Image 1 (cartoon, rainbow, N blue to C red):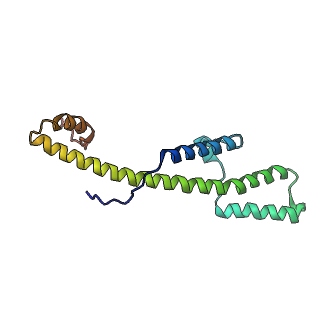
Image 2 (image 1 turned 120 degrees about the horizontal axis):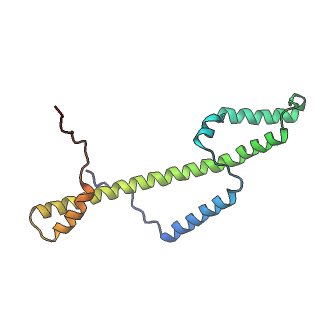
Length: 159
C-alpha cells in the first residue's frame, strides 16, 4: 500500500455551499425546458453524434438558401426549434460533463487516499489489539466489522 499523497486540498464549506446553490439555480432555470426519458424511450430514438449534429446544421443552412426542397409534411418551425435546443444546450452539457468528471476524479483520488490511511490506522489498531493493548480492543472490534474481507468462501461440497 502506497502512502503517496497525490491530492492535498481543503475546499471551504462556503465554496461547496455556493457551488451547490448555483447548480440548484441552473437546474431550476432549465427545468421547464428539459425532458426526461425512460430507458426504453432512449433506446428507441435516433442518436445525434458529431457528424449528425453537423448534418442537421448543414440542413438548416440549406433550408434557408433552398426552401423549395422542404417537404410540405415537415414542420420547419419545429425543426428550427429542435436544432436551436441542440446547438444551445450542447455546450452546457459539455461543461456539465467536464465538471462531473473532474468532481468524480477528485472524489475517487481523495477517497482512495483516505481509505489507504484508514487501512493503515486499522492495521496498527489490530497490531495493538494482538499485543494486548486494552484501549485498542473496542476500536479494533468496531473497525474489524468494516474491514472484514468478504471473499468468495467455498461452499461445503455436497456428496
